[in-house]
Image (tube, rainbow, N blue to C red; front, top):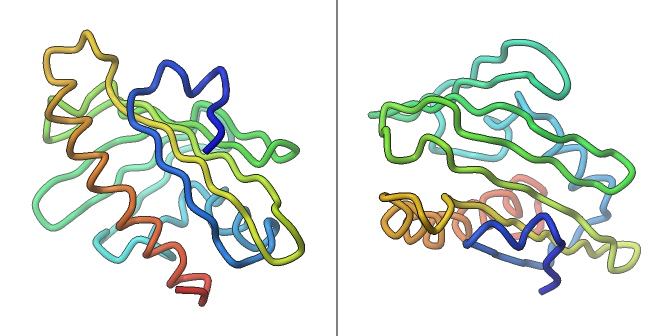
Length: 148
């Protein structure tokens, strides 16, 4: 696992190897409004705007969240996002970044950093939930890529 300087402020860090070319993985995760393509628990995803600053409203069966795209770097294969509104208020302010690194023609490392700052009153609970949440999401990403 390799953490970047930006990741250091995010308390939750997950890393995984995906047996697919970086271009294929990036095409899926960089489509900020295309979360339905790889996240089976989402019922609906609505986009507002394009590029950095765009917002997606993600609807689950019993809650929803609005996430803003804070970074999208096609050269570094990195995107960042911030939860700006949520029907589960403790999650508001959680941020995340997903960074891909090629490990060969058919191998990509995904580094996913996220969470609430440690000084947030809800950090312990939200960050513990994210630690359990992201490995499952990575499994769904692998399934969508046909490499699970």
